[in-house]
Length: 314
Ligand code: FAD
Ligand code: NAP
Image (cartoon, rainbow, N blue to C red; front, side):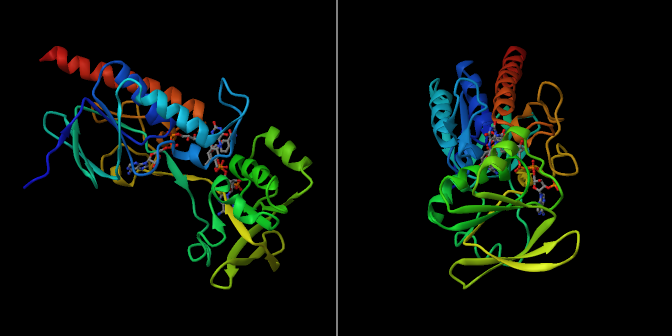
């Protein structure tokens, strides 16, 4: 027997800050709302140690902020469902059927808030040593390296901010930057440069991650100016080299740019009527919690306007 399709007014794919805020707005406007996420609600906030640029808090741990946003987002009846979305079908009447690994969901309005995920370095050893010394999440894994020397790869906000977090827990942190300068915000750079157990090594790429099969022991390096190669002993490698959009499930819908980020109009609607997007997954310049929640509020409100207009037309 075919599985029953669950019906909603709006389906939000992704329960990071954008999706959770969209859920608050949509459910408070009395839309029957569900957020579907393939992981725990909170999105990238779960991988963030300290957040100090979110209004109302001088400093809050990312997972704590996620809990607080989840409580807000469900207070007006929005549901949370655990499931991975594999695609969206748009029916002739413009209703959308969202295919998930826990069954199909149907609604006139859908908000894509699937964010982005960390880019991999793509060097030998990276996949083999994931969970054995290679990490993309300092807040999750720093405690495993107490008293040890670790390595960070990258030069943006994530590398420097998470390097600072690591430096409070591990013995020392060496940050390998492929170019001759950092891209991180000046305030983070200044703080990291003052930290005695953080060292920056510029013009240097990690070309391989080595170990004994059980744990990481060293990385191979290449100096990008001289071509010189070397090996550097380290117990952990934290990789923060940027993000790529989580849009594989929507790649054939004609809603993304060549790099996979979603394009919308100023009301956050894609070229598909009733299909909105919010947060990091959008083509945008500033990917932050504050910008994600701003998008989420607007997308939730626009979904309400769309569903109301359909109801008025009936
Ligand atoms: P995300 O938080 O990425 O959430 C997307 C959600 O969608 C995820 O939960 C994911 O599981 C889900 N999803 C994806 N694909 C699917 C699918 N197919 N099916 C179902 N679910 C799916 N910003 C700040 O403002 N301050 C900071 O201090 C800060 N620190 C950061 C530190 C790090 C290490 C990183 C990586 C980012 C940091 N940011 C910070 C940026 C901030 O976390 C993001 O801008 C924000 O989380 C984006 O929110 P979002 O809801 O758009 O996406
Ligand atoms: P990012 O800003 O895209 O920076 C990526 C960094 O990794 C750059 O320094 C880049 O070097 C380097 N890099 C890219 N590919 C590499 C490779 N193959 N090998 C070595 N280095 C490589 O990414 P991010 O730092 O993860 O930040 C992602 C988003 O989250 C940003 O929008 C950021 O502002 C936001 N964020 C905000 C905060 C905060 O507000 N406190 C904290 C963390 C993250 P080049 O410079 O040479 O290209």
